[in-house]
Length: 210
Length: 233
Image (cartoon, rainbow over all chains, first blue to last red; front, side):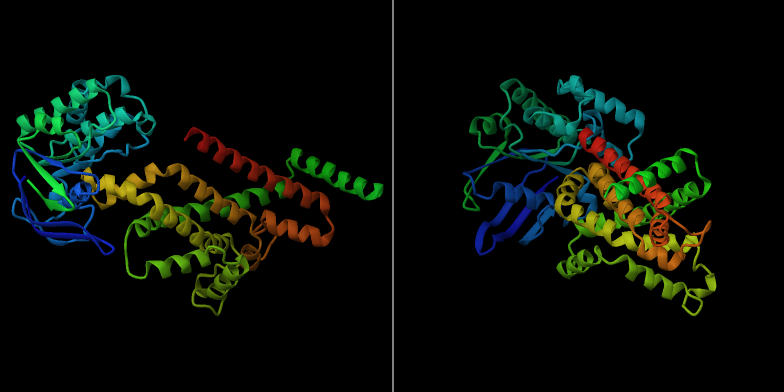
């Protein structure tokens, strides 16, 4: 999914936090969003994901404005993910369930993604009782299971161990390669951005400084 | 002083005897109380829990004013509710032709109205404070509006159970509304609270104490239930 942003402005009280004239997130590519704290990265992600509609300007998704159909084609993984108070298996299964995917297909896909993320041992643990790193892995698995056309990631690998980071980066790359899904990832880690991204955008004081 | 303590002790003894001998009148009163209050709580919960969640997570014009009015109604006196229902159901009232006055159905209607603001208000507050975060996650995972309501109810089920039990406690312990619309008729509309009130004015303390003990046992059971569920969370 291609995302085109034009004349986007966002204010918190009187303070301007985003001022973007034109920005295009290319279809099928991994785009990195870097910049200092408070530069507007997370706010931009929230706006693109539709969670924040209090802004001026236009955002188009493959040429269309945001509607319920587009909501269903994208997802956002946050730095501190919220996992449901149910088993990890059910957490990962949820996006398929709301899309009315057949039970047998759901089972096959959940098993497969749990294997790929090496989290089979977490299957019966309650989501809200997991550690921060485990939650981030489960959260990414839950986002990837329905193969979104647009994957928005807000520092998905912060505070987790190097082995888990390697697994998550591998799965983000695999997802992009296999499904041609668009990825927009916010990261503070410039090395990670170089490893993953086709293009890196730098935000400073709400403006794009490429 | 010794005489009065003996008198109270005698009352307790007779009360225990009435309970363990399965006195028919006492158990009819207990079952009717449980039936009326449980029915009212279930009816109000089924309708107003989803509505409370929906209103809590939705932004609409006048939400602040709505909150204030709703929270005010949460403490509405039971006699006012009883009076309102009596006016509606009395023979000359707009719903008089249903002939419901002085029946258990009228008592259920009155208690449903009494606990509705409580269930709606507590659920609305829960939705407003914690439901929005869950709603956002639901949206990012592709859930529709109905899926989101179900998701929030599931995620907040422990808090919702506590709300429902709080409403049930209010229903079973109130006396004003059921007294007005039920009339405290023997073998028909007499419930624990109206019976205690009547026995007290008649000086029949053993029966009043026995029913008071039952109310305490119900209250203890409810609190234990909440404690168990909260502990599991």
